[in-house]
Image 1 (cartoon, helix red, strand yellow):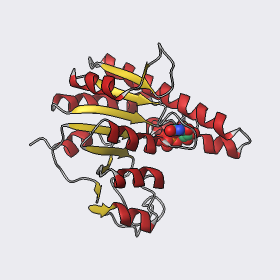
Image 2 (cartoon, helix red, strand yellow):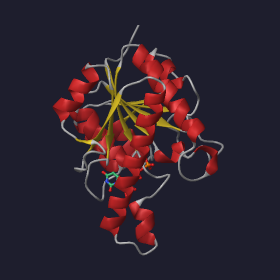
Image 3 (cartoon, rainbow, N blue to C red):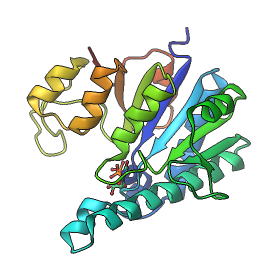
Image 4 (cartoon, rainbow, N blue to C red):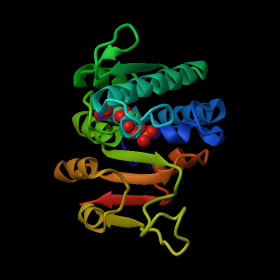
Length: 236
Ligand code: UDP
């Protein structure tokens, strides 16, 4: 039984760097493309927002003396680079995709609007929405919440390198335990860093469920779409 008709998949830029610590790991990129291809073959409409942390983050730049707004613009450009890489990898596997940009930069991508993005998904294309929200001081998590809500996705699937939401960071605290489900309020009250506060609050206000899972294990996206409970559901 297929659970979702349309998904917003959030991929972190950091995961895309794989083991190499910076930039784009082609093996990881191709694995993502394969998983997305398999998701499409299940009849699911797929929109993707990808981060840029493997290349540049505005906040980190500001800490080194960069102007924050210019740094964030550099970060948004980084998401475009990752989006183009993913689109290219999908094309190599015979999957049609379209890159949209929240900031006008034709012919690199089409200037984003909801209706063209939905039309592309209805034609069976993967839609990759880059530049996050298009504004500084936001993150691609918030970009994902925004696009997920606008594009009327049934769920935001947040693909990370951990397998769900934990009581504490499982990479630092061995006693941390995983939630099967958790409410938006509890995420906010406990200060859990599933996503930033703005992104979580937007999902809460607009009732967009979030499913956090480990996207770095090949096959996991399909498992989630088949209804296997391998991650954490964040809900009302
Ligand atoms: N960014 C921004 N506005 C947005 C989305 C992203 O200014 O709406 C910038 C910001 O500098 C951010 C960078 O782009 O640090 C990369 O995005 P993010 O940190 O969310 O990437 P991820 O952590 O998912 O790799």
